[in-house]
Image 1 (tube, rainbow, N blue to C red):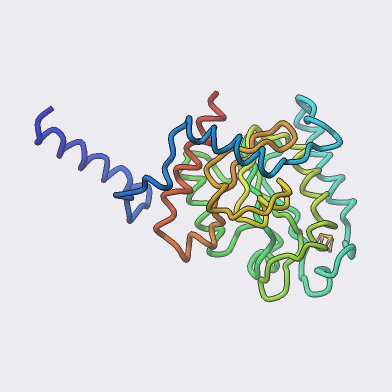
Image 2 (image 1 turned 60 degrees about the horizontal axis):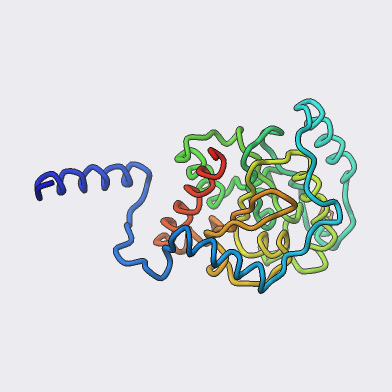
Length: 251
Ligand code: SF4
């Protein structure tokens, strides 16, 4: 291939990524982009180091009919009711249960509702939510085709991180949502979500981009969209993580 062809291909690739909304391309990322083999080695190293606990329930059962899933989600919402089980009930306007398809192949799980979510009773509808929605669209999916939820269902005051006791009490609800939906892949957004689901305390920058096992379901930790709003250059890494997710679903 001559230099003109190379330049043409390069231009086409750049236009492609520009259309996807990228403003930056990494020029030197050896320390972050690891090979599949290295990724597997890191994954097994992390697992042996952190020893992710298995659920007492074991792996989730294979399939549940759609209508059963929908009614199970409705029943769970009813069970949560006007929840007062933890101190986050004091300042919330609304419980943000989660939304999306009960048949979703991908389930996104963030840490907790923010101001806009608390007002609208919907997950990821603020600025970070817009970014997540645009990522979903760029993956050629519709927001209604995935399922979006949070670890805690009520807004922590002043958008602070949920505290351990709040997570410990509320986590069972998202665990049951996962159990009902049985997605092919879970994408945990940010460290709080990854730590709560995997019961590990490693920096998100170390674990993102590698699959973990959550009760038989592959779980990909990646950055929280709110972090990406502040660190636009790292959008690229989340995009790479999502390519692995799509690949996993295809396979
Ligand atoms: S955060 Fe969860 S446990 Fe706490 S009050 Fe809200 S729904 Fe209940």
